[in-house]
Image 1: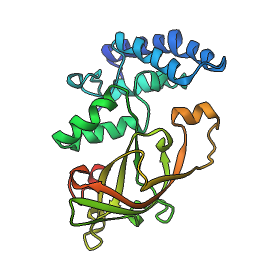
Image 2 (image 1 turned 60 degrees about the vertical axis):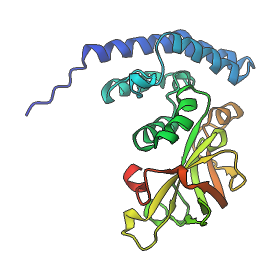
Image 3 (image 1 turned 45 degrees about the vertical axis):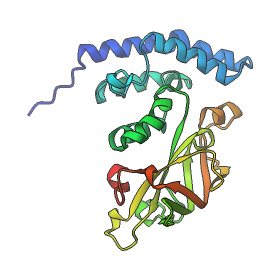
Length: 250
C-alpha cells in the first residue's frame, strides 16, 4: 500500500504562521535577554502576544484553550519553535510540561484537572516528571522509590530520582513510585501529583550534561536534577490514574 507523504494544507498554514512568529518575535527577543533584560519579563511579553494571535498550547484540544493540532501539524510546529530557544516557551509548548499536561488531561480526576491543569494551561505554573532513578538505569522497572499508605489519607514516599528535567523551575512534580512490590512487574508502580516546594522533595543538584549550561538556561528549565525523596507526604486524592497504572500512563 502506498504511503502519502504530502503535508495537508492546514498543517502547512500553521507551520508558516509559527515560522513567521519565531522570526518576528522569538529571535528578536533573544537579543533582549543578551542585553540583560529579565527572562520573566521577556517571556511574559512573548506569551501575551502569542495568545493574542491564537498561538498557544498547540497540542491541547481547543475546548481547553489550545490549538488542537494533530501529531503531524504539532511536529511541524515544534520544528519551527526549535529555531529559537524561546520558541517553545513562548507558546507554552515546552517539555517536559507538554507531555505531562497531556497525561493529566487524559488520566486526571475532575478535582485534579480543576486544581492543576488550569494554572498549567495558563502558563502560570510549570510541571516536571520524576521517574528515572540511578539504581534502575535504562530499565525503569528497577525503580526503588516506595509509596506506602499511612492510614491517615496519605501516601508517604521515600527514595531518589535522577535526571528530573526542569524540576528546578517546577511548581508541580509528577512522581512515580512503587506501591505494590508483589504485583506483576509493570503493575507495581503508581504516579502521584506533588505540589512544590515540599520539604520531602529536595533538589540536591543540577546534573552536568552535554547541554549548554548558563544561568538563563537553568531559569528556562534546561536543567536535569538529582532529587532526594524523604518522607514525602502526598494526599491520596493526588494519586493519578489509579494504583498500579504508572507504567500504563508513562
